[in-house]
Image (cartoon, helix red, strand yellow):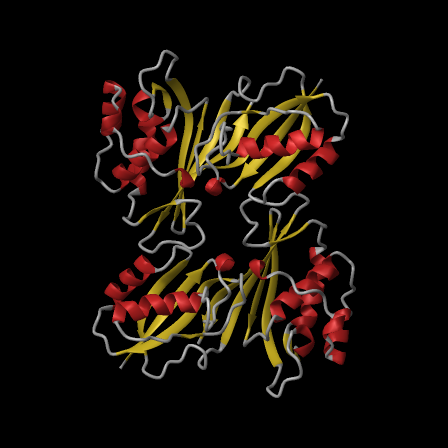
Length: 245
Length: 245
């Protein structure tokens, strides 16, 4: 059996997220599986590196699937992009090692969150960022970020209820940069809990507007309580940039 | 009477262009006039710096209108952006001189055309560029551009039939830059004929792929014949960047 690996880019605006649903499927996984199954004339299930929420985008989602087809990689690549809707693009098709598994083998991920920080909204960035009118204190946000980097139990920064599995994660880097009116926040870590980046972003924004002080972060870690963190920012500002193996 | 000047940004994807139509209006001008007329409780017509085609975008379209309302600029700005659809944004509202006219007073315009030049399409740039798979010879295109800059009769690079009015225009600058897979072509000139930039772009692309040689440009100028120029590239790659007065 061949194991085929895909690098996928998608504009999540029109989709209910990555993971296939049973009914009324308007998911990225569903769209791709439909095209590949038709192409190979067999029922194909693809394994993604992880879910993304409804509205979240990806520039480097990874997935793999098994097949005994002898179609060339080039033929597959051409066919898939030809039949996928234009807002989903397979950037690369390659042969992976037999035991490669897109989800189990990840060692880390990079996400980026975009904030359009200006009193006037943007006609072009509206679907790819969240609009925050109030001026953000970037220096204060950079101070706050230092408290988040490292290994912590992030349960208070997630939408999870009490979990049996570990909710300890390591964030290796958070970088905040501003270009024009766009604030870009990069996250690199070994894994992220459900809604974790969007809640961290909500907290950072409330720190940047001085609704919260930076010590609220310590409070969330100490008490493991979601209520001390900021609001969950919308999915549309979030991009899965890269998956590491 | 006050003369109010607007700087307008719009994602042209959903619109039939700038200029208002009589029926089934889905135009940028129409949307803005409806909002302003409601705001001022009087029938307002706005004067744009010029038309843009269906699907063409703008980052700095200029328009003006007259009113005797005593609403403040700030109140107007807030109201207008609040009621416009999200893909049209008024970036600035200001008081113009009594005789200022958005169309008659222009001294020049800047447009940009974007080409996504890669074998794989882009999920994010699909509405804001044209996708050309074949590798473009940028150096050759830069050579060709030298023949276009200056004062010429551009009738052969337009969709106009024989005109009574002059079709002589001056292009001051054309700059081609490439960043990653995106080729960006800036045009600055005193004015552009109907479809002129899109036809010039089609010609430059055919030169870049070597379907045409650069002397076709001389031929278009000499014969004033559209047929020697390249195809008209789609509107979606074109942005009106700035209007000069």
